Length: 144
Image 1 (tube, helix red, strand yellow):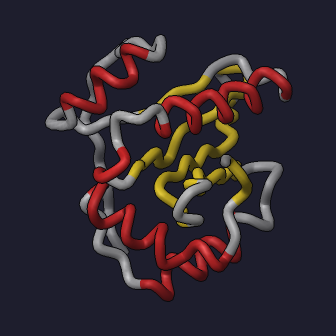
Image 2: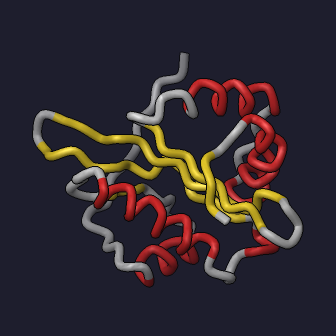
């Protein structure tokens, strides 16, 4: 079942971030971000997939409204992850369909996302559900 994220999902989200995405983030950060971002449902859409049999979150998707002076509003996928034990069963596709429905219901012009060069299986997944790679770019960051 797909539902909105809540604070009780923090531990499972932390595990999924680590095993599926390689982000080893501490539980307090995950809890703080869930508390903050889930209150901003005009800009952040975070849905989880809870397995009906084991009553455990096994995947999530996080999208943010993307607006700029040079485009119509769209969504930017900030994270899509499924516990590797459950990959290949349609969970990621269902989560993306949920976000696509949100985008259409809210007159968004597009959905975009970034995927690291080495994540070849993820690239195949996105292509299989209708996404195309339209450019290559480098990311620059300054950490404070």
